[in-house]
Length: 320
Image (cartoon, rainbow, N blue to C red; front, side, top):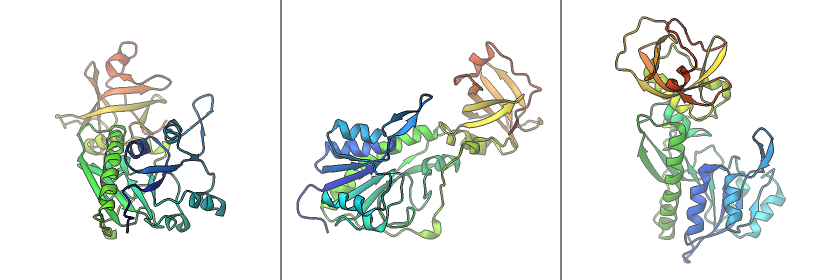
């Protein structure tokens, strides 16, 4: 049960941009963030210069102690967490599985901001998988953590519709902000003892494993409707790609074409003009407004055609 005081002592654990709105809301709110735990600095960019996680940058700007352990399953790290005497640990895309010794440390346990409507899309890539699956709504779930992968009891879900042109990147931003506001609502309910836990229906669970670079290869034999979801779900990473004359092209901004009749092989160019690049699929055609040729920046098809040509007898392939 929550203490009678109005402010919780919170340890926050998070790493990427998704975690930032939640931490910012906590900093601006009535609770006390006594420490922030995040991943170690990583090499980034062509120069491989060490770069701090976004959560670290925010925490240091707010003068909050930052810990960046390389291992979380040590007695030394556990003792360091205990020294902060947290009432609650809040996790948002931290990036590591926490042992039971940490989950059981604070009196109120550990709660997580998961980027899906559980039990759907458990795992590391719930936002991308929601787009890939063609979900019409997405959301976040504030959940009580246990030793499983997103298997704990649900505390507070919140949902939003998925737009027809939604990408994983645009949905990421929306759900990060939704997670931050939903977290504050959950903490207010927790203060009032009005945050009941609901067990997940494990029979309805789906998994969302992390994506790999090679997952972006386009299979043009798939129907246009599925590829429309696929390209948006791969944007901005790892991006959907295909090959023309041995050169890699990345694809963005897909639109379903009203004319679904085509006799051309999947991946074939139906037309290429200032309106975009229309390609045949296994069922119907898909129009692309933007592409990224190998070694070039992302650009409109119209801009590409100013210096290069795409002919209707050419065919994009899934591999070189």
